[in-house]
Image 1 (cartoon, helix red, strand yellow):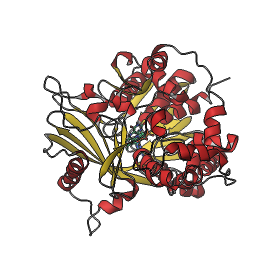
Image 2 (spheres, helix red, strand yellow):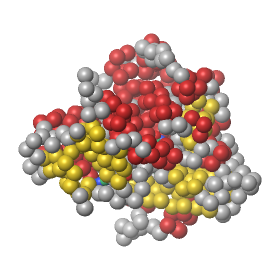
Image 3 (spheres, helix red, strand yellow):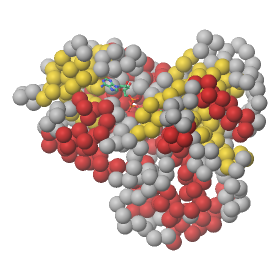
Image 4 (tube, helix red, strand yellow):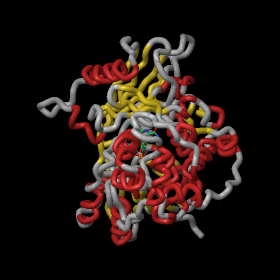
Length: 477
Ligand SMILES: Cc1cc2nc3c(=O)[nH]c(=O)nc-3n(C[C@H](O)[C@H](O)[C@H](O)COP(=O)(O)OP(=O)(O)OC[C@H]3O[C@@H](n4cnc5c(N)ncnc54)[C@H](O)[C@@H]3O)c2cc1C
């Protein structure tokens, strides 16, 4: 009987183990190796003693598209249906998103009528931009930056303000270097297939009607915009880990750092940890590509070099809780384009998105998450190159809440987390890089497959769906 080893116990690794148990019966043993003391990776929830929840990593998932539906299906399989907290498309937390530009908070257009009005900070109605879009030329380049793509198609202002801020919110990255093909594949495809985004939206192939049931059906019928879980998103990764452990042959080992993957003559590999050597027929790596590189044999120096070349950014998440409802607006949160205050990326209004995560038994408090750093992390550093202290970072976050939202009170609770190298940056050429890396692995004849945020999308939905695809592709015929 065969053994599969999964390196990394974040959502990608756990989902891979789950799907191996489901689809690859030839593996009687599935071992997840996680170097830290807990599973979940960047999915990391603190439940304070009074029930108030702070998310230090991801906080909400979208239900749409095949990826979104797959995660809902997984949540259902894991028995989490009753704990799903949806945000409806009609909720202010879904409808209202803001930009903070030139010292003011501006609501982004969120209705057809608002497209026809001049809505600051934009200098002209967005309908003018959309009407001109189909007449711009199609690019002949295989890839380009998100900024150059959007400038070409929707104009410089939309790229400089809206798209710049959006890339900071999603990737904590700079739209002037991120790849449109890797970061927003549907936009790239629409231009290639239909010559324009507007034509793609109007005439593109409609997503096939899905025979849905359970949570997927509910999400469609009730028009969900996004969702989380009663005990935060870590409930999802904890539930996957439990399902893997409770299935025969499944094991999730924490404090188990993989140190090396050594090929054997019989086509298998030995996976070494500090205290153990496991002979494996299949290895799934779900860790950051740069962390995988040194685990491979020195003879694969080209592959190691490629894997090491993917950059990622550091993000600081400051969770804040204030007494009472002190938010002046209702919505998901606001973002800042890079033209504003360098390292401050945005603020999520957590108490508005998931009021259910508030403290129990006392009046609703206000919870915010302030995100700092990303590609602008260096701007945060002191003149000697050191990171400001936790209390200085906290002060930056509370000052932002005061300046942007008028919240002058002191927070009653706070938490500062530095997430190092947490979001890989898909720069121009990323799609080709993934193909090159995978070719080199195939040539190496190692029984190794890649999943995780380094390759085909960092969103949780992408991580889970890509893990499923990689495993299903190995299903015996
Ligand atoms: C601040 C922040 C906010 C985000 N917000 C959202 C959001 O709202 N929605 C969304 O969809 N996505 C969001 N994301 C993205 C998403 O959370 C991540 O891309 C995703 O969790 C990555 O999961 P992963 O399993 O691929 O990698 P990881 O979470 O990095 O897991 C890899 C695991 O491998 C372990 N490991 C590393 N090296 C070794 C080794 N040698 N041996 C054994 N184990 C090892 C690590 O300890 C880690 O646990 C956010 C990310 C961050 C950082």
